[in-house]
Image (cartoon, rainbow, N blue to C red; front, side):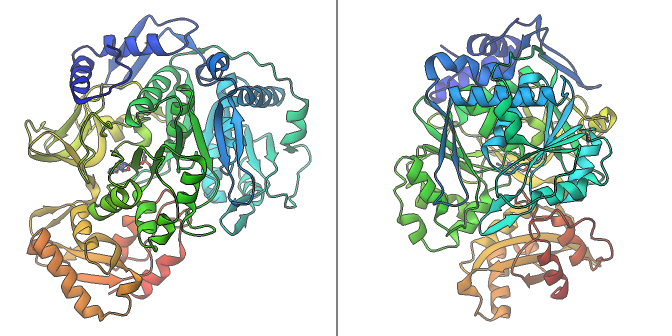
Length: 635
Ligand code: 6R9
């Protein structure tokens, strides 16, 4: 039996058991049978979680681009590696074959070399979702440069902080970017950022919008002429298994963003293995993940995981609402997408729109649906299952983090059952544990606590760039010898996991622990409600009371607000209990969200507590304008 592809429940149990009984054998076999190594390892795993130090496949030599590109050229050279679907549906989609990808990556890698980039140097990539983004990521990996992709929706100051934190010498960007009906002046943002980045020697500029930009002498260079001249011969740099592959920033609850460092071999093996199993990927599939490559989801499940499997992966430049709310479904039909992976926030937004947008399109190619990024509420789950999957496509609710590098807890289609709102079972090799506040592991089922992982897995981040102590302190000091995720979870009577949200979102009301997610689920079941967010605010008697921010559907907007408040509280009372009723309910047109669609509860908490003096940095929000509206109407 091959461990690499799990096809049914029995296999899952067998493989899982093996993976925890003998992790070294398990991962060693998978690595040996499915990847291209220039030299194999001396030791599969060495670790000490108190330091913490972890190394996978120590002594091995490889290059991840040989695994993602070169080795496919014999059998899949003319197969499409990347489908680029532009923002504007009237612009033709591009199909980039593995042969073409090889040539483009090698040329780009030579351009970087000619710019003086060497193994170990950091390269900042600030690009929209155009082919150059995937190509530049792979070009860095080809020559052993460490890429640091910054999501092209971040502001100049956020970009500057990230460039400086890891001393990037080179920035790769474009003249502009298209997002729906908007055209954004990316180069202008780079110019602004570079005013405070002394270490950057050059900016390579791709052309996308053909807008006029300022090109600074001696620093800014157009990319295309350099690519035209570059040789398409670029042997891959030999990397050690534990050489850093990339840095990706994630925001912490406090302080500056954390540059999570991922290394080469373990990350490759894990992202490829999880891609294959979680999406039940097969050779002829056309897989689409709607994330941006600026997030970990794009790194692992648009670029590395799919390409390591020789898959066809779609890159979509635009937004789900342009030119109308049927865009996602139009693309599914157009490219006959087989696996579709998106975020609950997108599902909720599209579920609010007329069903015609969905029904106009033939979605019969779909086989597996995925979600990631936040807990998916029951209503959204059912809409996804009914309207999109026609109850025929297993839904994988995939729980993981920037820090984990790959999917950790998730159903495996046709093997482990899916249950709405449950991420279900750990993938092979993943050993979750739930801890109580005193650091004691909670044994058995029907328990809830803090979610930890008590054994290393290949794709775990190895450190925070330039600050190993912060890495230890943040993730390995709360519970001894365990990685602390920052999330809470419950394990039901059959051992399935439900992620209940960040533990800092737990609110204690009159001594009762209340998770925000189940209350929000209850509210969202009200037919007039589109979305909601709950926070705590100080209360004389109860310690904390609950404050709800509620977005109404169009149908609810004309209703009497006091009646709606009563009905919402009745719903919560019915679903959870009177203890979870809200003291205040504010109706609002939007909720402050991060660029990856997570609600910024920190801001909502401050407004609810009437503490609006220091709301912190709101400039990186998706919708900063909504903050003032919420303040103006606060109760
Ligand atoms: C991949 C990604 C990580 C945090 C994580 C958790 C939340 C992600 C989830 C989920 C419930 C899921 N999260 N997937 N919560 N169910 N299926 O999103 O990485 O941006 O680092 O966020 O997102 O709270 O701790 P990242």
